[in-house]
Amino acid sequence: MSNNIKNNQLYIGGVSAQDLAKTYQTPLYVMDEDKIRSQCQLFPKYFKSQEIQTETIYASKAFLSLAMCQLIQSEGLSLDVVSGGELYTAFHAGFPMDKVYFHGNNKSIDELKLALTYQVGTIVIDHPDEVLTLIKLIPENQKVNVMLRINPGIEAHTHEYIQTTHNDSKFGISIYDDKTMLCIKEIQQSKSLVFKGFHSHIGSQIFEEQSFIEHAQTVLKYIHNVYEKTGIIVQEMNLGGGFGAHYTDEDKPFDLRSFLPELLKNIQQTSKNLKIKAPKVLIEPGRSIVAEAGYTLYTIGGTKKTTSGKQYVFVDGSMADHMRTALYQAKYDAVIANRMNEEATSTYTVAGKACESGDIIIKNIKLPNPNINDILVVKTTGAYHYSMSSNYNRLTRPAVVLVKNGQSKLIVQRETYQDLIRNDLKLEG
Ligand SMILES: Cc1ncc(COP(=O)(O)O)c(C=O)c1O
Image 1: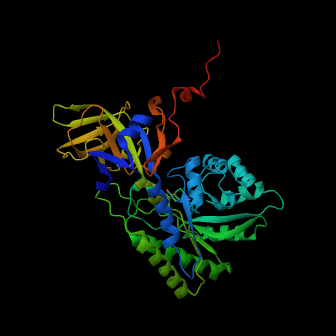
Image 2: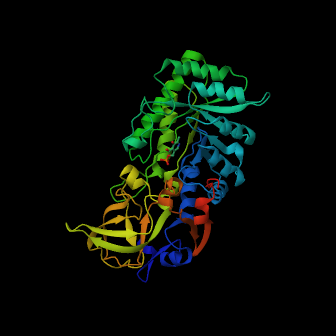
Image 3: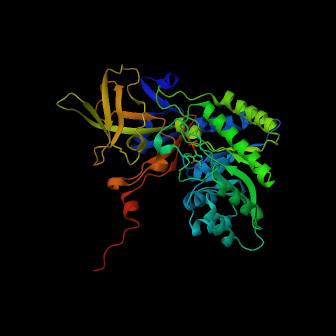
């Protein structure tokens, strides 16, 4: 971050954080457009091979808005959506529907109908019941590309709550369950479904390359097994997302530029060993595209030292805009934007303004002695922040601003108090 400091001030995308706070107020989400774009560009550049077809799908649950859809479209990535709301956003941004993958373990009838009306590219079926539901909804003469979410039982070393591939996970059906083979046959035999292949996802914020390699190898072995048992050739394998991001110096994300070609090489070799044609490989990164591009700006309202000596810094946001510390005990780094050259001398707990003891943004962080009205900037908040935000305590969601080359642009407006009561109805009389 050192090259982003001028006159003791933090600059993001060439714009002073203090100016951003003045112009748009705080709390404020700031996204660095160049960082998002360069992460997007990294995937098509390194996730490619002469022998294997590939596709990168942005997992929109990490951060989605109309502008973000436009940005992803302009970078040529596909889009993963998991709800009618994400789908609706993509449609209204003008995102090409044939490049949309619709996931979810309990898509509603209305959501499935919307996906069929929009003619989304692929629906990822989660379990056998959904096969039947979907077939009933598909109009005559319409064919729908589908993938089946399988559970390959790989345990990625990550936080318990975001591991998704236990055999008893709520997502997908296990490759160790005989009924899965029946489900594949049922999809294959349906006149309205076009079976493209398997989807699986082993977790998020993963730092071990080996987990992804084992994941791919396990799915390939299953593809081989399916062919042996049913004669069905599985053409595509979506390996999900999960690449780690840097939040604090404890995090050691691996270099995707060397890993992605390695992964493809391994898939090619494993396929060769299994005597199958390597399937098309798809990945679905979310966090690794947007996390490090995002910053949250807060204004410090005061500090407090408890009788035992614990020092608090109070900011004007809360767990409503920063959920991951309360939810996952996630760790973050922060700086005081207007005092960048000052030494961080004491350790503080950064607490929000919500009426909840668990409303902590950062547990222990060294900062220069904070003053009222200083601007605290929490780093790596581009993924799962705005998208996980809530109105707890009837707090309004912050605005989102995109910065690039010294310019800023509002892409999501700050919520107003009027927005908070928009859907409320008064009792009669
Ligand atoms: C099915 C699926 N794909 C992709 C992702 C994106 O993961 P990440 O943001 O860790 O890359 C997730 C996240 O939970 C997911 O559930």
